[in-house]
Amino acid sequence: MNVKKILVTTDLSRFSLAALEAASAIGAQFGSRLYLLHVVDSLPAMHLPQGHDIDVQAAYQRSEEQARRRLEQFIQQNAFPEVRLIPIVRVGSPVDEIRRFAEEEGVDVIVIATHGWTGLKHILLGSVAERVVRHSSIPVLTVKPYPLRENFLKDEDIENELHLR
Image (cartoon, rainbow, N blue to C red; front, side, top):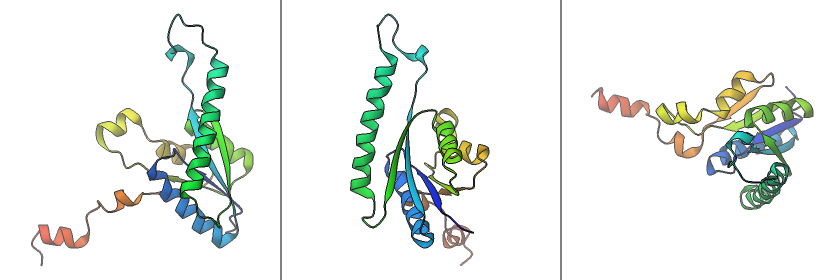
């Protein structure tokens, strides 16, 4: 398998650092080009305040510019110095924009971190990672962030709970 282009997604949270780390390791092994994509979720016009004269395009432009600054800051604070990332900001539905960029750029793999939401929070907020996996024609590597990995039961926990030792 030859991995020339890797798309790493980020919502600029600490959870997405796991995806950045995994993609950096894979990219170093294959000499891949790494794209770091942040999507500014666009709100439909019907969610804008009524009765206000709002320039929607200007508002989206300001959001995109602010997101670019935040993404650059995220890279400066979190990326490994030897890893060259190509920062990309898009406005739209995160799932659609991730898929669209990956297809347009011809990436070989998408790397995305999960938030580990379950129950009501998962139902209400959904999972971008889950929808990308379900709808992408490009392979997707999902990565669990470290805080979530530490919360899983281990064999010895189960054995202790069931008094098998």
